[in-house]
Image (cartoon, rainbow, N blue to C red; front, top):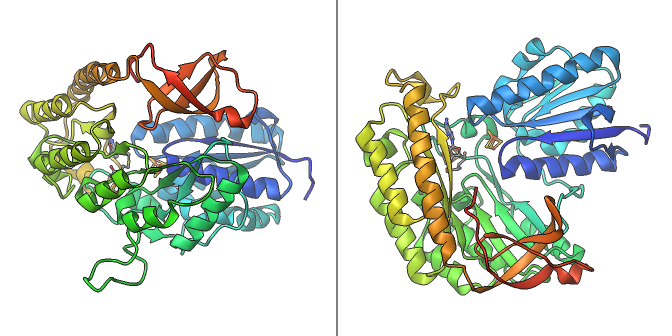
Length: 439
Ligand code: SAH
Ligand code: SF4
Ligand code: F3S
């Protein structure tokens, strides 16, 4: 293959997609492709797509339309749709955008070279069948030199009634602790300081791996994994996401307190503060259980930051049920909350229900929730004022080159007028003097 071909990847969606894009970029570079910042200068364009809500899906089509047009003038342009829209739509995408060369689901990310070779041999390829995900031997092209994502479990076996993820990401597949540790050791050697372990439902880690303890517990759990990778040389901070309240155990919380590298930040989506809505969502916990988890975390780690996701306007949600979500948000005091209006998704049970709410009601609730969130997040930020915090500097502030940007252990984004001269400058201690509410 010619070494002068340039590629561009646009990534939508969650950290899982970002991690997949870094692996696919690594594969392309190993094949001799070079990164092009400008998609219009690239001969290969890959969209790594998200379909969690309708607006995420529609965004992809507008991007695709533009590049499909370009292909008419430049027939050797290779157009690829990867990720969750690719998995959801499969062959239908080829009918909608016949200019596409390759449609590949998330489970096929590590197979990009294989699939591309079929494309370069003149085939239009759709790869969406469920497969056992193989270990990737190529080095990812990571965006950061300081912090890295490491997948520990792919897929999700939950069946939340609103969610497309199990359809598009397939069943849970855990990587072995040995593979995870080996990847982290390599990161440590390369100079990375922070690792975020990734999974859609990371508490499910190890359920599909063989072996049980004498008491009948799975041999490999997230808690065991944290102990198993905690001493990897060079890696000073460990994070993990996303946690499901149903499986968040006190054993895990105690491990987080005991293990000094595990950062005091927990991303635990609650989705709704109302028990009937939680039941209709099939989340498998109550709001009381959620509150107990947060209380337990704060008992062991009083300064821990808590972030979450919430959905408003789920089918049938009454004003009173929505108020229960507001109440939970007010009581807990989240450091950050990702909020969304419910969006009916193809192939999910809730999309077929007849009690859908009007868009205006959803938009109004979203706005009210967001307003509350910005207040509570600002209150939470007050606690940092005047404190000296350990910050791992990640890069220059893209909006102000005189500043560096980094995070506290609690994942608070901070900015400071410090210059970086070498990678050893990554660790700083800042006095936090000003705060701005998190977006
Ligand atoms: N595995 C994670 C979340 C994955 S999806 C969990 O169990 O919490 C990320 C977030 O998108 C979800 O937490 C949810 O808040 C939101 N989301 C998922 N499906 C949605 C839908 N149909 N409409 C609106 N928001 C949705
Ligand atoms: Fe979706 Fe539920 Fe799985 Fe999260 S746990 S990815 S919300 S099905
Ligand atoms: Fe989107 Fe797929 Fe992630 S649908 S949120 S990119 S798992």
